[in-house]
Length: 279
Image (cartoon, rainbow, N blue to C red; front, top):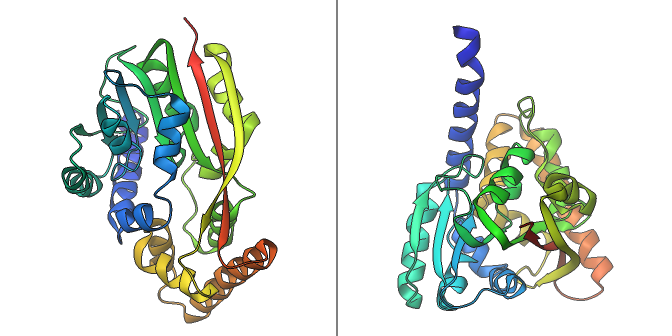
């Protein structure tokens, strides 16, 4: 009996850690100050229209859900972390957007089959640890002929490289968990969605971030506001040498990307995916 329940308990513990991690810092500040244009871009790419039923999976504080609601859609924003949903409600109220906020796991969505015209996720579902389960849920809750839209950081881009830089200092991932930036690889996404979708379009694009004057500014902002970065630094807090090494790795990453850009600011690459569920 114990063996049968162990995987369930392990998954529950993993999701609890994820929930706590995303509640660290101030993710709404990351979304609104650094990448405010990504949510509206995903909404446009999905062709969201007034009256459509839209689900934003791993919605965070609503950087895509709120623009979809302002476009006139009937929107549900679903996320694992209650603190992010609470922040999203405040942001939506300030912008005059009406939508439903629902706590839920991207790998076990609390919705019926074929329930939504559009199912989207803006740098969200990519952080669910079991990619196949997340992809299966995206497809399941989308109606036949409906749109699935994703915006994910690429492994080769700045955020993907940031996760690579943090990996040696992070706790070992549990068995079966996959790296988030894999969702930014075209072949990986195609394999996950398979023949359940048609009209697949994938475009690599970049967003320009100009908030940071020097590499150390980027590092300090993420150490203060971004849950995954905060969690990694907490993991090595008792080892000053490791903390200094990670500081240096993140500074080097920012300096290298700034030099490649050749101007003030950083270019962060992402993969924009749209597809239709096969009827």
